Length: 389
Ligand code: AMP
Ligand code: MG
Image (cartoon, rainbow, N blue to C red; front, side, top):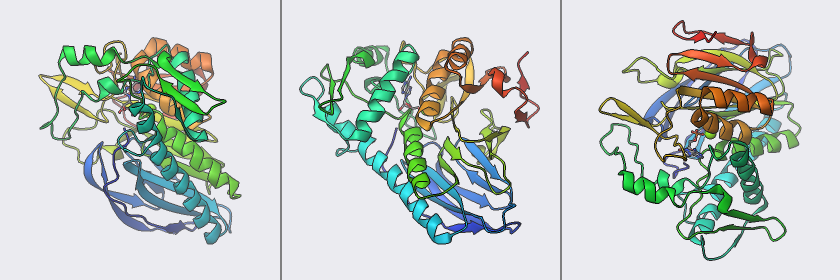
């Protein structure tokens, strides 16, 4: 999930009504390897690995859009705030990034010093005292695991680490059935004990490990939004790769316009994250997308990707190639997009409808399924994709 940060470059720009600006940010991302991302400022486009966000230009005379991008959680993050004060905007953006950094330090599976690493090291030995944030996200994670019947399982790490995904396939490999079976013996979210009164977390079996890669970015976006709001900002958008949360309206008085990445971009495309197949408006909501195109390799015509089915330990083959979930909070959209991808179109759709959440699910035949509430609210831009009957 969260790997170590390899480079950081930030930018700080404002958008005044109708002005055109351009800038370039070079970033590295494990999902795509080294890349150059161009940010277009009219309409302002936030480019991230999964979603492409478009802003329209403004109406209020005083308000401006302030935006800064950084590499955190080993991915490309962008925070955009609407404010009438450059100083207030800068403070709010810094506060948002400080929260994301804090969540990264607490939850990073790969860092020796994170609380997740401490819990993993003490598995089967003793409970570990953790911060309020770690306790909170673990309780939420267990609730999601229960709600999804284990399709989302934060204890998958012993299996996840058997898989290697490298961009050029040179180091990609399929683990042996035996290695996967052994890993699976240690996977069971019901063996996580959270003691709220003592603020302690315990994994019952030695060798068990937590990996919050499927929920941490959405939670980071939630915490950033909280911090930005607390500074009196009325509208902002926080994008941590494809996990995006917005509140308020942009300068045009509308919800934030976001695009969903084409899960099957033309082969050879060197900027697949710019290829979007559908757009919608996001208001006071979070959206996350999980897909089999984000980290994958193909061997003998078979696609292996990073979203694993906890029942098999192999890449989920549910008939979906992309699953986007819209929810009031980022931790929900992030974890549920992963879970729905595993559950497939029928079970996934049913879960979302039961939870009163929205989803855009793309089947392998490029038919798009929408939850009832989204009908008429999403625009499909790519004619290869059609709404399912
Ligand atoms: P996402 O890109 O948000 O769908 O999350 C994928 C990441 O979550 C993977 O890179 C793994 O770290 C982790 N993961 C993969 N499969 C699952 C699963 N079934 N339940 C929970 N976490 C998972
Ligand atoms: Mg996710």
